[in-house]
Length: 326
Ligand SMILES: Nc1ncnc2c1ncn2[C@@H]1O[C@H](COP(=O)(O)OP(=O)(O)OP(=O)(O)O)[C@@H](O)[C@H]1O
Image 1 (tube, rainbow, N blue to C red):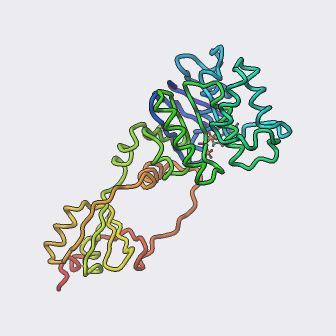
Image 2: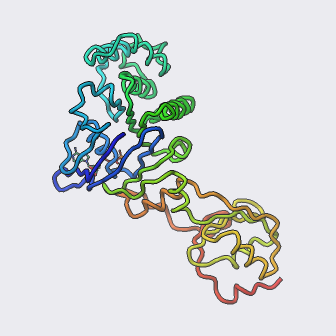
Image 3: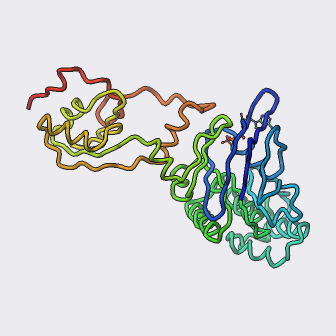
């Protein structure tokens, strides 16, 4: 278990982490999400004792990282830009780590096999691809067979097979009762991997809840509608807060109105609807909604487009549009 209480880190006049309190529970995968610069890496570094908190505390299984006698057996981490001597082989790197932490040599072979590095274990790390480097970092994190695993962007640079491997690995670790805490910018991957989410923005916690709750609390009602009069129905449904897309012929995807309201408006106006399917909001949509005011750097995604097939935030419908004749 990882427990942070009022944890803060200030660099000069920059508050990177602003008094966060959270618990990462064992037995499930907890995802750590936030825009660039939100404070994820800083939080992870404080968990690992690599940065001292300006205020507050963070403990791993009840004690700060530095207080553990055998920290690698307690918590393993893959943090960004982990330094490995380029002239070493994967095997010698892991062996040196094992030797300095009192970990038996046969565990080195185990983690090499687990992470699929068998074929390259005797090769120098300087020739490793980004994906192989990530696997080596994960092997190092698992070396002490720790109860707590912290992975910062573990799928960065991995090919699709590697991404699935990480997903299965972290799920397996959680299923054995371990605490797994991982960050990623890949929402679809996070949606398939995490059970619970902690979302951070500008150093503050924005959400700390089961993933389904995060999606449901933020996602707007959405539905797919098939109708032979998509343009008329678009006009009838248009109002503030409603977004309508026309992805294919006679299909509308409506966001911001529930299925019942859509059905009622169609009925009142005698517009034929031959399919009405509620759609689940995606984690990506929920995340964008949750963090929309918290982003340090965001590209201007361009104004709404009203052309067919494009998204547009519908303006309030003019009164006469409510009475479309057949
Ligand atoms: N050593 C440092 N000195 C000064 N500022 C720092 C330092 N480390 C981080 N920061 C600042 O603290 C804030 C949080 O950074 P952090 O790297 O923790 O964010 P992050 O959520 O991990 O971002 P990303 O998703 O881009 O990796 C940023 O504004 C960053 O510029």
